[in-house]
Image (cartoon, rainbow, N blue to C red):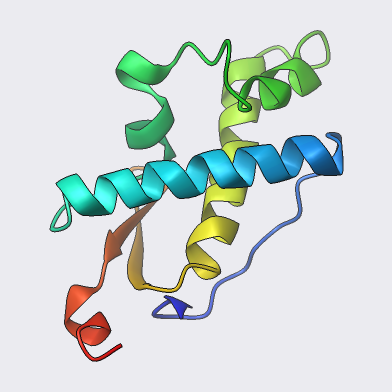
Length: 119
């Protein structure tokens, strides 16, 4: 299932395949939690990994920050972009169907429950 509309998904390079898989698994868990608790609300990577969750120490997400640290003037922003692409990949491979929109320069998603009721 995944996304209601086809959309570009970019690859994230510069981290190991193991790090990438851990991040994907971590983000998949975050998406499941969001859909369980806030199924009627839009979300983005900022909602899942920002705000109170912006300290990525001890999480697989830290690999993205480490990749950009010392190479970018804003490693947080660049790590967020990579995280956004990985989240989009997670969503596109999910067994559920999601709507997507771009608002305030960020990609947002929402579980499209109506079309998933028959599955």
